[in-house]
Image 1 (cartoon, rainbow, N blue to C red):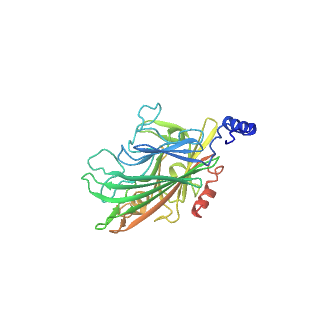
Image 2 (cartoon, rainbow, N blue to C red):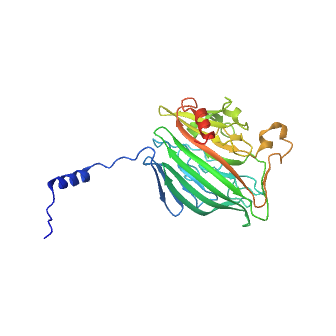
Image 3 (cartoon, helix red, strand yellow):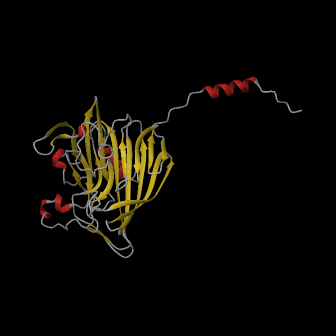
Length: 331
């Protein structure tokens, strides 16, 4: 007969394994959870964001959270009942990419008869070597259903104990039979809408003033409203909250067309990189509304890359300039 006697040492080992506590997720762990309309992204066992690809006129990422759960975005219009939030610009959906003049169609605004929609075709995700990747394909459709272009979007996520990183890469593809013109307008393009507590002091509509403690700074040391419409390799937006300083930096990759980009960054919390809006940004070009037009030839493509760096401290403490150099070097 087969000997079925079990060693006491083996029994003890099994009990110890069963009783061992579940190890907490490392700060660098990435986890995706797929639903019908979104992909949940966890970094270090904590929610970072969700890529929402259905149910709105364009894909977007919401919420956007620091490692300690602090919200680094405005909730409106995804949530309309959050106390203290400003409910302007309902097309500012947390973190997104689009543009306000594509073959004359406005993809920046929402809900009107002249507004286009960015429609999801496919979404895939994977994790490798501590980096999570979402790959999406989208169609840019006008109000009449005409597809003006397609895109291939790649979003990469990673984290450290101190910071979170989001790399956004989009390849814009013109159809075989027709070129695509990205028109000169300030209404674009790679953007995040930050919470009100991150803003500097600024005016809110007629006669209203918000006393803020935030700071906007670019690579030349220009600050707050002086950063609007300027070219810069990076811009950082930071502010204190509950005894800490939280920062959001955006980097413009050196390979991007028209690097360094112009910045449509506002003291009321819109933070956007816009390589197209030259006549709005450059006083010498104001009389030429097509100065910043960029044409993608029929069957051609253009690729843009940006990095969001969510950090602790101001731009100096967060070593924003050094982190940009790493990004420029391919790290």
